[in-house]
Length: 317
Ligand code: DQA
Image (cartoon, rainbow, N blue to C red; front, side):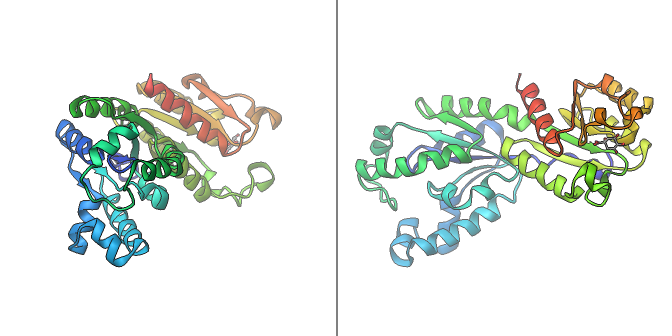
């Protein structure tokens, strides 16, 4: 496996939800079920501050607690392949961190069950059922926006852990490789009237942001050399679940790239930034598209995002 085509880092499973939703308990069961390490952000905060969370809230104030929490979550989300449960306020504060290299699960639980489980506990910001309801109303939408998956905690812990695992599996499984061929490294500078002003780095950034949004792992590879593109395609076997490919001008004549795509059991989607059909005649023909599930042309960078979404759906089938 070449360096530029290394295996994507294994994504974390992150549990978010209301205080008392069962994130820590389900997180531990999920850890036992998968063999992944388990971390709980509140426990890490307490370890770091040598004080229970409720006391940090009371003595140092919420702003201080949130700053420490963001710091701790930034550190924990740099790990890969772990199960992590985070405090109920975390998605309001750092949804960006939670979604990087992770599949985020919103563990939903009936408020009466939450209230019952919190009885006798001293947790910050949750005192009565009315408090809980107010907090739920303010947070539910934020949790939904932050999560890739919503799972209900309405059963015994083992069953819920199994349900969560089944729900995150397609996201964990989806590993995509985006391949760009010759001259696409010069996007931004190259014929901006045709390809736009955005650069290749902008494209990579858009792909990374979209990947985080979809909860899939995506690597990007670009080369101006046919052989390197063929090697990258070969190396997807067993490592990636889908290929998004813009072969550049090779589209129009590289039977070798066509054959490489045919040689691996990985579905591919061909993307062209420009509408090749409104351009010179030689661009109307693609010899590589025959080896792909489909072709997206003329939609600019959005074509890559649409192709990723299609391939994620294929993995989920
Ligand atoms: C392209 C179209 C090709 O014809 C051209 O050679 C490219 C870019 C596109 O993305 O529109 O290099 O693939």
